[in-house]
Length: 297
Image (cartoon, rainbow, N blue to C red):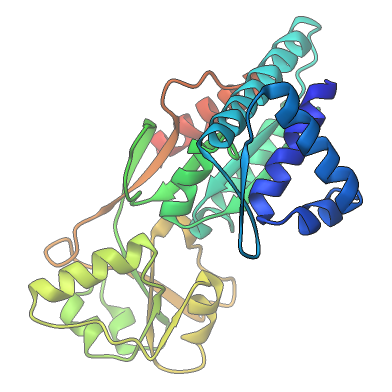
């Protein structure tokens, strides 16, 4: 296990781009950290960092070393999880990168359900946009990703795919709330509150608006889906989200209505992992549970 400690220091330096900052993060002095790195480079037989103005960065050899460490750490976690299974007491740690829409309802329910059967398993949930989630898998920072409209799908093994129709969020006393389904042009005629451009919902809306010869010009754009849901209560505006992240509030002040598929094509909510990677037992079993739950959506 001791060699993992040195690799963890290398990862900290690569992440921060600074020996001094990495030393602070790892509770070491800068000189001690520098000696550890220098010692590793001497034993390894090659430098792994290049010095640049303002800090350091991995060279190609260092990139290979870091990739090896992440793969080794992942494999070791998988073996630990398998050994725990042998004793009949499943343990492990599941790391998830996901879109915001999964946070309020779907993911808490699924995690609680899994932990009710396997209380020894812990979780880390990281909110990431669709490009960042794929990067999390590639760097072994997350085991599984659950994202809406991924960007690249390079080395992304799809475990489950669920279509999600974009919904409008509006006040329940808005005249449009009386309709079962809305047209996009109606939504564009009203003030809108939209997700930031890096999110899949915004991508679908922008594309659909261009086909109509229109543009989406939000009075407010944000990275927070929670802000979208709340702001429409303060101004007669329309927000946008996918249904897995929506649940009617008990006070009945909000309404959610699908936007016609004639105008906006459904997007894909995708559960996936890094292609070719064998997940730790806890992560693999939780991924199976998520896939089954999504299939029922």
